Length: 146
Image 1 (cartoon, rainbow, N blue to C red):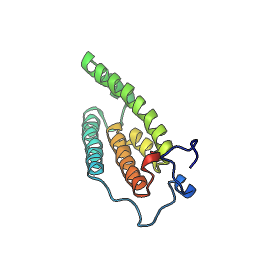
Image 2 (image 1 turned 180 degrees about the horizontal axis):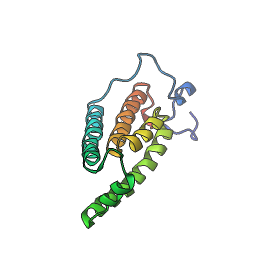
Image 3 (image 1 turned 45 degrees about the vertical axis):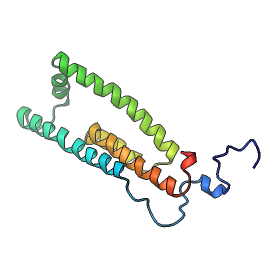
Image 4 (image 1 turned 135 degrees about the horizontal axis):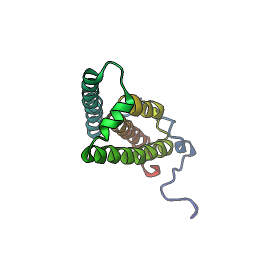
């Protein structure tokens, strides 16, 4: 090996492409991936319970303008809304970058779910998919590349 090649570079060039599998099917979920999946489920159910209560209280049509006004109706609500907006923006940028780095499939579904279900669902769902991808890469012997 030449001194210009990093020590963690695979000796087999086919291993550079993480889509190539060494067989055996998809990686088994890790315990941490199950935690992320449970958080995703809670993050989908709990916000929608509040959304359904909003719809019951304020009418069948989901009035986005009223929803945003209520979400900013007092200093505590403003703090939570702004905290979520800034944090979600930063995490979304990271999710896009990380999915490209890991060649993670399903980012479109994650981003759509952040908008249509809840960010509290989409972010843990992304972490679930990421954890599975990291396990798959480790199984393929590409741990040093990620």
